[in-house]
Length: 83
Image (cartoon, rainbow, N blue to C red; front, top):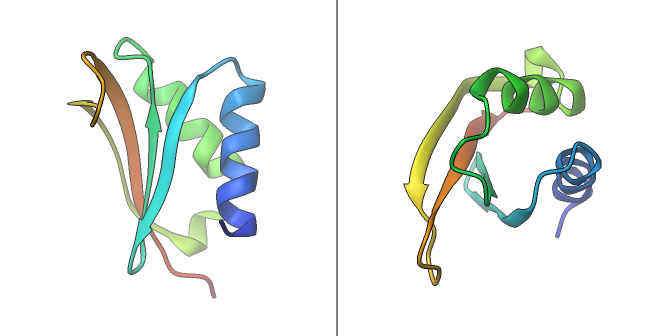
């Protein structure tokens, strides 16, 4: 896991969120939080506190079913393009 993944996990967990996984596919980072009722604005603010706005494109927060679990979660995704 990269340093960015570690920083994101720590930031979300410090705010009380249960992080199921953090993954990357090419330049897209996905953070799966096991809370389907999490506020999008709160999750966005955590991501932008860790990653500079200039290095982040297309920040999105959605509710999805979580792989391997019988419940919904909230997914924060964005393209990471470090300058």
